Image: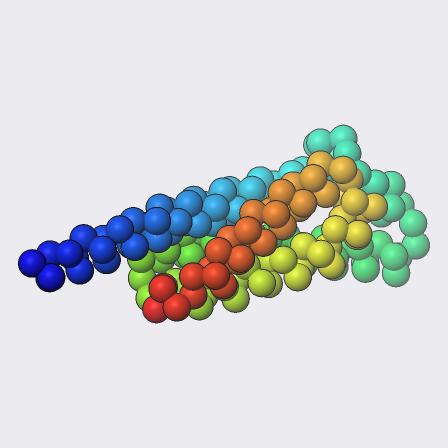
Length: 157
């Protein structure tokens, strides 16, 4: 009889964790989609397809400034796509409740939060308001997911 009560009690404890895992996994999926959207809009905005931001007008300046902005732009796109790829890996790991997912996702969300804070000031000036709004949303989702993982880190492993 005591074993049945322990099983029911452990099931009650795991149920909120199960839904929390699914919500955290969904947060990583949404983050990956937003990061890919951000990379696409950044490229389209830089080449003038989407009329936002000041990048096309900045690129008419001096050669040194132009090369620096292109370097920043290329780094932004590469980082955004790589963060999206790792977000998809974290989504799969957390959704399937793999042990490795907690550590990787914690590192990833920390990196996303740090890079988004550093980026927010530059992206609004260079890439425009749309990119800044997307980065604020990505930062918020990453911070919430990171907080959930920190709160429940021992339960993951």
